[in-house]
Image 1 (spheres, rainbow, N blue to C red):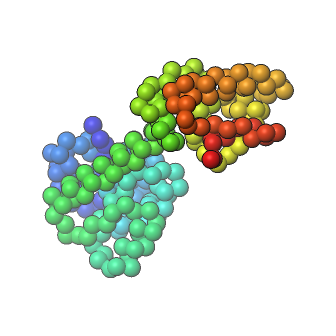
Image 2 (image 1 turned 90 degrees about the vertical axis):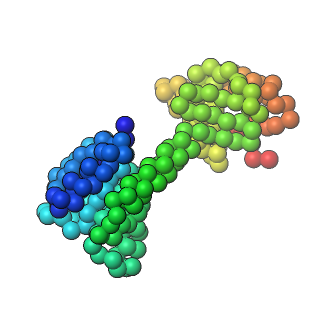
Image 3 (image 1 turned 45 degrees about the vertical axis):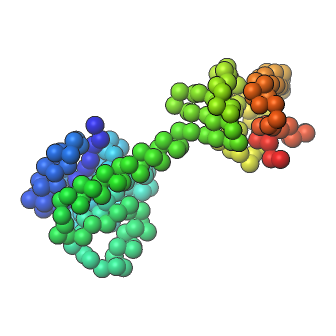
Length: 226
């Protein structure tokens, strides 16, 4: 169940929002001032935050600035201020949406659903790495080439993920060893060379026409740039 935080000092408005969102199937927590809201937001437990601007003890724009220093949780601003400049400023600070009071509760619920869908899509995209016809699904460590699954060892998978996460970087054997084996590199590059050779061979076996990893002589390895 997705969890939503409402930071709104007007108790009637807070309660109406809470009841509406609970009826939509969300878990909802309410805060009634800026300090309480900041403390709850910092817990990182929420999928979305509804944030009023005019709050006791700490303003909504201050809270938004803080949130954006440590997280990318979707934030929808609730404000009686209907000035274009105010909206633009808050969107530049990192707000994902802006709803002017008085508002329709159905519209708020719809805007919440839109932001949650967008966040889910971004999260899903972040969990997939791709290059040419090679796809890595990070959650279950599944690797496919041209739709065909490729069985990799843990070390081979880690090496591939390292390259895909840094497509323009050349990794020395020392870089790869310390990142994948999580040990200090002492000069023996046989382990890296053997695993890299096996990884390239397995990819080549599925698609002999494509190049995925290239050797940069004297430097190391990177994704093929041809």
